[in-house]
Length: 279
Image (cartoon, rainbow, N blue to C red; front, side):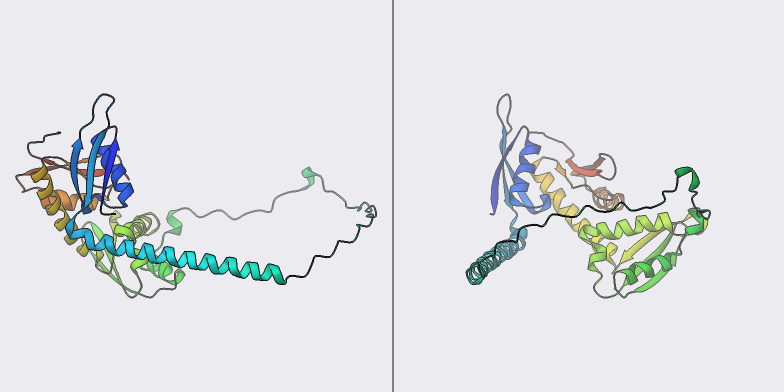
C-alpha cells in the first residue's frame, strides 16, 4: 500500500489514522488535505509514501509477503502431519474402574504456635550509596550478562563522564532510535558513582554522532516541507538531547520556527512556518 485516505474528527487525527493504516512514519510521507471537516463532517486527508522513502517500504512489503507464505506453508505441513498421526494411533482402551480409596491416617504432627516462632536476625541492608558501581564495572557486567564483548573508553570534562562502547553485535544495545542506549545511560546515572555529581553519558558504536547527522538532515527536509505546505509538522516523542539537535539545526532558518510541547517522557517537537496558516 503506497497511499491511504484517512478520516477523523480533525486533520491531526485523520493523519494519524492514515499513518497507522500505512504502518509508516510521519517523516516518510507526503500529506494532502482533502477536507478540513466541520460540524457533523469528518476531516479527510490523503497520505502517500514519499518517493525517497518508497524503496524502503516496498522491501518491507516483500518481507511481510514472504513471511506470510512461509507461515501458511508451515501451518499446512503441521496439519497434514497431525492428520497422519491421528490415523495411525491405536484405539484407546477403556480405563479400569477406580478402586475405592482407603481413608488416610491422620498424621500426628506437632504444630508450633505462632507465638513460639521467631524470625532469624537479618543483616542491616546496605544504603544506595554503599551499593554504587563504577561506570566501567557496570558496563562490563551488562556485556557479560548478555554474552557480548566490547571495548570501553572513558573521557571526562567539566560536566560529563562519557563512556564509549565499541564491538561486534551491539545493535541490540542501541535499540530503536537509541532508546535502549538512552535507558542504559539513565540507569548508569542511578547506580554508578560520579565524582562532583557529574552526569554519565553512554555512546555505543558512535551512534550519537550518526544520529545527530541523521536528525539534522531530517530537520532540513521537514523545514522545506513545512515552508512549502504552510502547515506545521509534529515529530514523534523524543529525548531532550535529540530535540535540542533539531532546535539548533533550524534556529537560523527564517522560514520556520520550532516549539517543544508535552510532558516527559512523551515530550515532542513541532515545526511551524513563520506565518502559520491552519487551513
